[in-house]
Image 1 (cartoon, rainbow, N blue to C red):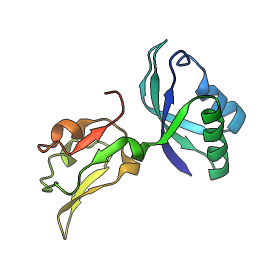
Image 2: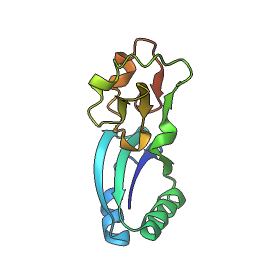
Image 3: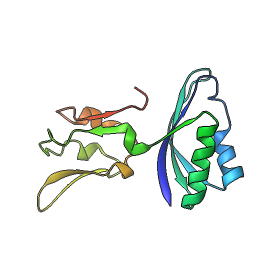
Image 4: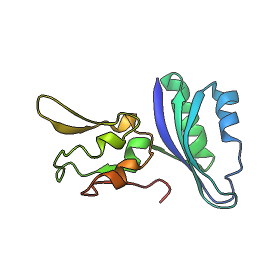
Length: 136
């Protein structure tokens, strides 16, 4: 199972070796998709966790008990589909394939589970229908 999460470190703990702990304690493979970490200040990581559901659940619980906030990636991305005109401008900038337009209805389809928070859609959308909480 693969799950994308946003991990938020409180101030003063950004230098912690959390990724090593995930490997050592929970045998979880991961990819760092995006990072915004400054020592002494709050930091954020977008991680793609790869393990069985039980190990991922235990690892998330461990991180939360350690004072680290863990949120599903999907909760950090906002898209107002009610105002979308399906112009397709955002699809050409989406490197991960999270945005697409396909026949027969030619409506924009947003798949947040594919998103890597590159934030290119934020500027590509002429109606500014996308927003994210990551690295403001």
